[in-house]
Image 1 (tube, rainbow, N blue to C red):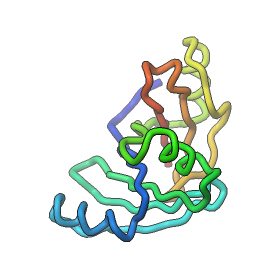
Image 2 (cartoon, one colour):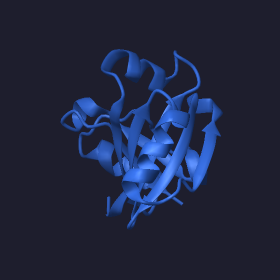
Image 3 (tube, rainbow, N blue to C red):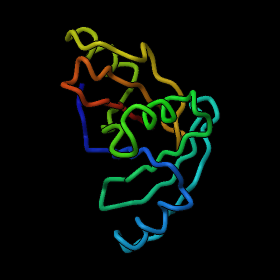
Image 4 (cartoon, helix red, strand yellow):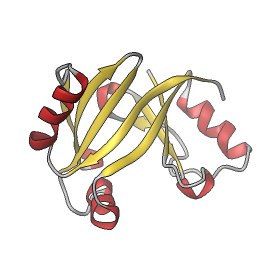
Length: 133
C-alpha cells in the first residue's frame, strides 16, 4: 500500500448548520460542498486546508454509524483518511499484513471517492479510511 497524503480528517458533529460557521471563521474559508451519503446515513460538509480536507459528518439517522459514534463518544474526531492509488488493492494489502478490515472491498463515499475502512482494533484505536478516485 502506498499512501500519497492525508485525504481528510472526519469530524462527527451534532449539526452542520451550527458547526459550519465555526469552521468558516476558524479556517478563513468557506465550506465548498455539502452532500448527503444516504447509504451511510450521513450528511457531510467539506473544507480545504492546503492539500488536506476537513469533513464534518452529521448523522441523518441515530442508528447510523455517526449517530452511534456521537451517542457513545460525543462529537469529535471520527476518522483519519489517507489517499491511495487503489482502495481495493490497499484493503487487500492491509489484510495480508494482518490488519482487520471493516470493508473487504471499496464502496462509494462522499465526493464520488471509492472508500474502505480499517478496523480501529487493528490501528491502535484510530478508525482509518482509505480513499481513491
